[in-house]
Picture 1: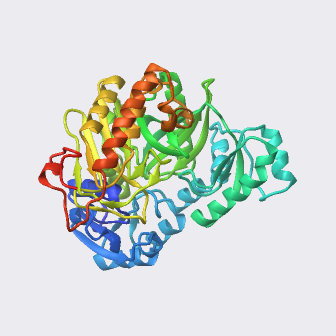
Picture 2: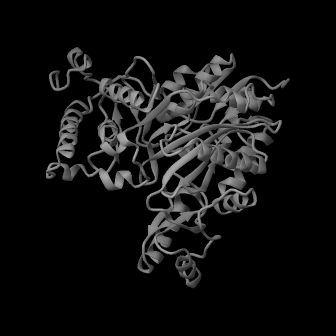
Length: 502
């Protein structure tokens, strides 16, 4: 039994900090929040047992400031540190610094993070473990004959990809020799700015692939459990928007193969904690290792909804050095779950990030619904951080019930003061291809062109255009920011857009 104080510093913000703090409270542990000056009134600060200011709004001065985080952990006498996702969650140096400071890092070892953080090294580890990988290269020089030679060997289209990082940054699709040098230069520069390392490599770009990932959970005793797959093919600029489990494209045989591959890779690197092994599924049924995320994923709630297991609590148990309370035979997924990421973005202007004062936030409720939000009414959505506000998750006995429930939930939800991508989600969930499960990572690029809908003659598209037009009018009128000194009238708060005071 660990003698470490059951007190966890959550080195993050927003909805993931809220989610972790709730798990900590249910375990009977103590939760410590940190916040920047921009997050003084945030929900995660209010839910914590203790909260400490760690710096100015800019991430480099607060949530990325390792010295400040460790000093706060010392000051609060925390025994554990949970990194959440983003920020320092996959920073091997941070994990090592946390351990050196005498805290227990809630996640894998620094060595495991490092081995999977470098995508070139991760590919090599996957090959050694017998996991299929997308045809690709080792690390490349920025320009020159080697890159051109390798591009010809792979055959266009190819993906220029940063060896470190994620979230779609440092990635460019190339379709000809003419694109190659500029794509490498742009990806290198972007990766340098975002991750501090501009190392690149090339991968074959699969045009019609689906993004499938396997959730794994492991402990320090060598037990690795695969908890089924998630489909994450609805993306824009390589960033996920809608996730679901199970995938309509994965049968039992393929599911078993993918889960076995994920477990083999986790065991090969001595993995402990929650992690996700991501694959590309080609149109011919072949699957290839993409990367491993050595942390809790944004989309973890859909797995929790169908399995009934709490991944945050499992992380705490594993961090204590205990065995997982359940094994592979206990994983019996039931039903279907779909998650929509609610982002402060304008879906009618290429998903441009938004910020402002949330004058009103009404969440949906009812059977099979879950809201994981980091904000409440009268919250400020800062300009300094990722646009994700939270997620709405729907469970159903089957996919269609989950889809309809999620549509209902989004219809009930009111967000006033900041534009969100809710209109996009309604469009997507109503699209004939989504309903049929005909998905790929290019779905949004191929189908989402709101500026063209009004010119189409197709009846289905006209119906979708009408939905989008109504949503656009609603959100452009009701989502106008209200000054803090002039809150909306009770009429507006009762969700009657366009009828209240300006």
